[in-house]
Length: 247
Image (cartoon, rainbow, N blue to C red; front, side):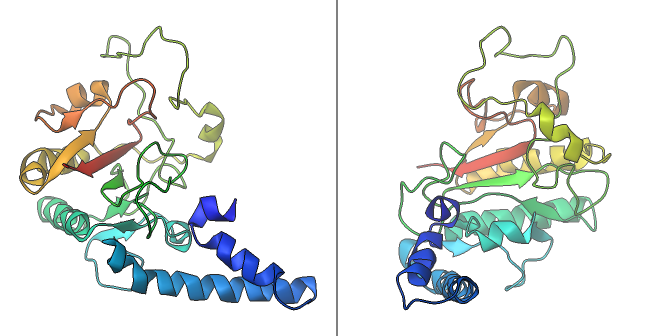
């Protein structure tokens, strides 16, 4: 479980349980110390695997922040250098159009090895995918405490290609999670600015796909070859923006 959550957590656990016999509290201390050492080592070693951290407050990334320190603590913030630069330029562009805007980053990938799954995503296993939170009425905040699962539901009559299909795959509604939502409103203007940039300048810079639900594509007036629907078996994308590099 620790390996699935953070990629290096299982190694830290083994360091704690396979060492000299210690009290439970001391073993916990060994685990924390080992995990911290591995976390720092990950930043040093990750570039050998072609990945760099996006933003965890350890380097200057103007107008770009992780949703929560938890994403950093669990090593879910690694991408290729090209994708990190695209994220930085996107944040700069949205801030230039809408001053004092912070772009919020969600899941990237783990620091090592292509093909290692970043649960619960179907992809995010090669450093070439990155999720962004939607923009909301209060800058630097999201409607959900984790940035996901605060869906902008379609209205009656909106384009819904999955209507009538049985609930399959990962297309969860997560209705139970609504108790954790706050009352922030979806900011269409800033989200539209970000998506237009990704579909134009981002596409020219190597972005191959941007996943957005069809009803939001219509609502925000989006167009471009990279704006895609991810299909009915994948997770919904009316709670966040998913981008990935062209291969």
